[in-house]
Amino acid sequence: MPQSMGSLVWSRQTQGKMCFFDQVNYVKASIKVQLKLFMPFQAHQPKDLDLDTIVIPDTPLVKETQAFVAEKLTDAFFNHSIRAYFWGSMLKMGDRREFDAETFYLSCLLHDLGIADQVHGHYADANCFTLESIQAGQQVLSKHGCSLQQQTVIDEAITLHLNPVVEGEKFGWVAHYLNAGTACDIVGARFKQISRNNRKSVLQKYPRMDLKHDVIRVMRREAELHPCSRMALMKRFGFFNLVKNAPFDS
Image (tube, rainbow, N blue to C red; front, side, top):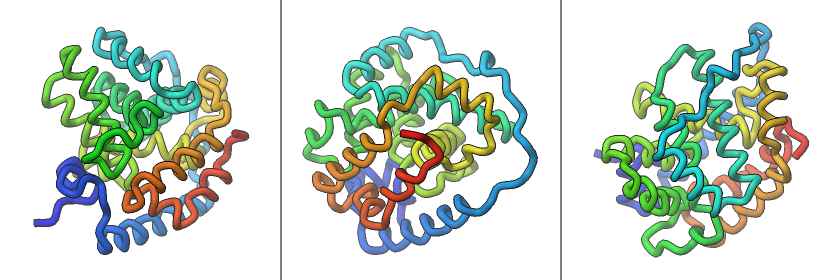
């Protein structure tokens, strides 16, 4: 039975390389998402949420992982990871879903570790940076007491986050909201479902710096290193324009 594209099992079986049918299905799903992205969203004005209720977990595992990631990612990508946690958490609250906050935060911290200069392209058996993220992340997770079950949830979320859609009922809400939080921060997906005051607060505390430029630079490098990866396909089909047109100054 074919494994779901982007899943952890698929990623390990294929090393992140997309076959022709994977590419066709990915493009179809992306078109649907982009059409929805550009449709005017007019429900009700989102309410301000109490951001004090969204707490970064204060555990030894989180502290060690955060320090590990901060040493490797640029400030722009590190802040992106933190904002993804807040966007995903706020969208989760609006949807009235639940997930384990520590597992979600670790997923956000580690999801882009594979694009760090010390990591990207340094794993011979990885043809997608998400696999490099999980392999590099295992160094800190296994060392500091992360259970195998929790690590599997984190790894699955990371490998899936590049998919156009990640169904929470199928893959779990950590994976769903990592996808939603990162898409919100990169292309502005569901951004208007978060109140203006909440958006302003998060952006002030964790500024974007020159994230758009950095994302495009990393996408170019990923496409060169891993030409059969999902990000390489995204580059070919105009993802740069979505990044450039996202509702952020930088």
